[in-house]
Length: 302
Image 1: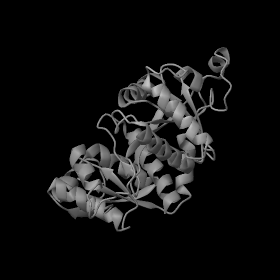
Image 2: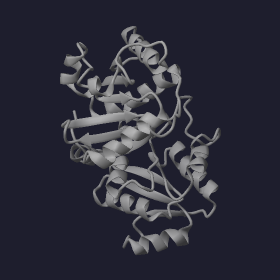
Image 3: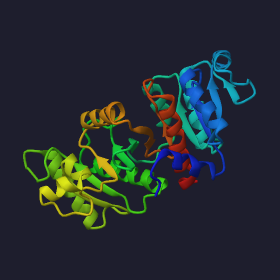
Image 4: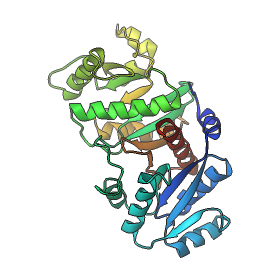
């Protein structure tokens, strides 16, 4: 099992090089990460967007003009669709958002003719390297699904498990978290958590061990779980944290990012190929790790 991003990068370099299709690639932070990935042997890229603006960005970043293939398309919608088409036609292995709004980008991903639809829910899977835990921790969904119902949570969970498997977790432990660790009829997240746990017991959710409801302390701290009298293979040992809604996920993501000295990367899962949807606020390091994670998933699903 991989314990940190250095091991992620090492593993990715052992695979054949994957290619990223970058939609609307005239984005300096994205190009900087793609260039770093190319130099490290993690991934290659084809850049789709306004050629003149891409070349301007490359000049600023000292990227050789012949480093990447460029497809000139000045219209953001058409550039996004072209990038998606390259992935759906197997000419690239993964997709990355550049200088285009998320709604336009996702419309291209979900395009009925050329998109990457699978019939599954799209969800964001964040992967953290947290020094205090000495392991990788996955958090989902902090970016896509606002208030998922039970069956949407099931798909979000399964998407996260597929990413965990790519990282090397043979049987990931999933904590379905809520404010408390007991079922309360007035708190829907506790009911959903209990049902997901039972679905796992009955084989409706496979390839992982699910328990919930668990409060976050019981999910991450063995001592806290013992104090509450919780006996579970997941309590205190969670690999995946399934949050009840986007507010919880967003707060957890940003708290870990800004207060725990954690490294992180993330991808969208549930599409026919990994999708890298980074924020402008994400560091270059985070973007690089996201590319590496996408390469791992692409290798697993090729």
